[in-house]
Length: 158
Image (tube, rainbow, N blue to C red; front, top):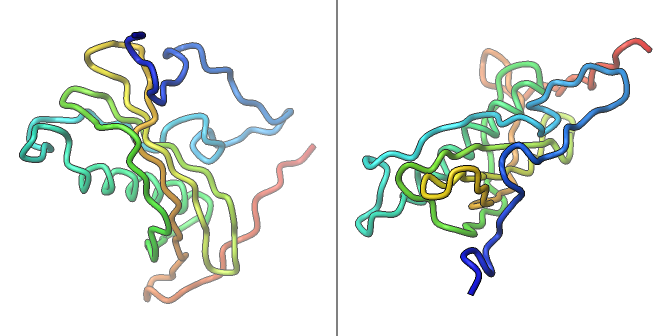
């Protein structure tokens, strides 16, 4: 049996192709080519069986989504829904977890994001495994926490 048969494995670190969009300068976090956050899974984050607690992973995904949404909304956002959440593989102590997000829909005041958590296994450095993916909705809010319009996407000069 192959060591990683049947698992959602990704290309080894360093083999992912770069992303470009012509001559425009694109925020790499908004483009999904750079993680919104990267965090090391620690022993304090485990459940009673020794795996990383699912709630910890959910919190990391929510933080990453908030970062991506606030960059696109150019200001404060709040999480209003985790529309879908799937755990594909466990996360273990020592894994480096990178959370990526991309905006898939923009409404008048809301943004829907697709979010993914990728673990680099401590036991096999360079091995990247998709451990979680989610769809979440965020709403842009003003200083009084009232919904505000999401500004149009900035268009860079040609």
